[in-house]
Image 1 (tube, helix red, strand yellow):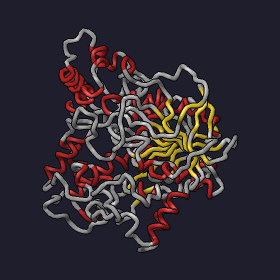
Image 2 (cartoon, rainbow, N blue to C red):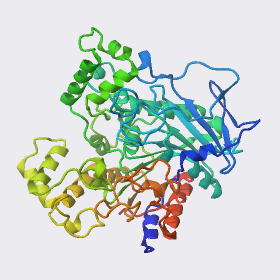
Image 3 (cartoon, rainbow, N blue to C red):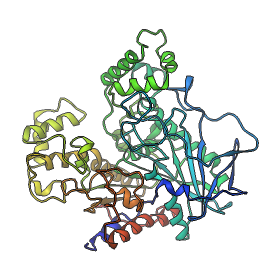
Image 4 (cartoon, rainbow, N blue to C red):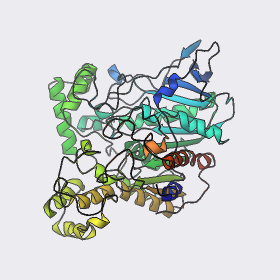
Length: 536
């Protein structure tokens, strides 16, 4: 394998922190004197991992359970204390995910653990014997399109990042948080807007950050040295926290990392779409004739509400509400209405191949073909916010995205793709990648620079990876196994990462790249990003 991959790794120098499979948490031993941490409302005991010399505190609640009257309501802080010590040695359920049936079985197998409405918990990973060192803190916010994800997902175990930081002599503490998803966390509609119940998943994240400010010292962390980090919708969440309440700085974090997403949000569902979804859910739950629709929705079973949310086929994501999300993200960026902290943001070269068909095409064949100019223009018309785009605008975009496969994506495939993909596949994928990822990276970097705030960017383009074909290239999410140094592959499913293909069949250069990518960002994380990196 060409050693140019190391140059690529240097271009990602600041961007990544490593994770490991959830099974590592099981590599522990029972202890007569387990690790403990005192927080404001009591004391927790965790579990020690001998192999990595890390203490885990798992499933700690940071809010009251969002059930019953607190369903579809902003998260509420804990308001009671307890005596003695409580158990924090087990991963807790994920929040309710996108699913097909009403019996709490996720649609996709990326989550095979229990799910529950009572899910607002966090996991803390700290070096053993850290005492009162006041270590920097990394907060991971998972992605998943605001419909899936969990801090118990084995792909997002933060063991290795902490372990590597200790090996480098720059120890950190890591925290993984949960937040509500799908219709439980991102329901829209007129009643939701009127009652201030929008963007609940983002509000969950915000409350978790407040909890960290109030309690991380009990684990040996420094509340003034918090970095928030996310990928995809997790990166979008990082961006939302940077823009929250008009860019108000609540001193919750001092730096941010956004992978394949960020402050520039994708279009929200229209008011008409929100209303349609709202009415569909009311009908499916039998609440359409209730005098108090919110009380009715809070009274149905979790299974029935989950079924209605998924059967509605609604779009659930952050929406503009004149409160948490005060206006369009582009306007806030242009006006400098964001928290002025250092930002690291980047994308993968072939992001767009993930967005030009069903996700099932990753590693296989597309479910949608793009055979001609009309299919290219139709994709643009369906994607941009202004659904009445003029012919002149479409013509201009046709010039900006010429029918020249050699300059499109995937960069790993040379020449025009066959009829299964369609002659315009590369063109559409190039536009999709710019729309969904690259434009946000560029605009965010420009605005951070305009307002004299440190910003660093990267572009990841290593291929081949994970046995994915050249028609997929370096698409969305493909950096994560390397970022995490994930040799075991726990949590990765075919055809994304077929068993044995990610690392076991790769040569030593891949090991070197994974090690480099996973360790490189720790020094700048500790030193507040005091380093330099060229913007591609």
